[in-house]
Image (cartoon, rainbow, N blue to C red; front, side):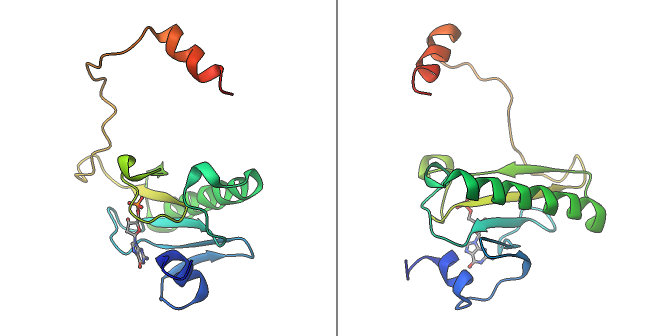
Length: 137
Ligand code: DGP
């Protein structure tokens, strides 16, 4: 995985502003922050994205994300946060090493739009859609 930028951060080949590290997980500030203190939580081991991360490491990563969100509130004065995991290019993933964005939010006018307004979309009935997911679990 020598070409992976986040593996290089894990190996210390590229510098990052680390905020947390243990044997499995690393967290550091995003180089292109969307708000002050925007952090990334990664597994040290390379996984292409969320879909491939073993459950025990996912647990560790989300626990660290929670700690960082709490610290952003306590230390930076954030009032909330968005936790975001972009998965595959279609969803905006640009670095193909699993990471969780921990994005602190400070005010309503910060110009960061994460838009969950309902859209007019063509879709099957909701029970049919629910069954299509349930059948794969
Ligand atoms: P995503 O689009 O979800 O794959 O997010 C990747 C994030 O990684 C993006 O917000 C910018 C950040 N990033 C890319 N390269 C570097 C880097 O070399 N250092 C740091 N700290 N962040 C990086």
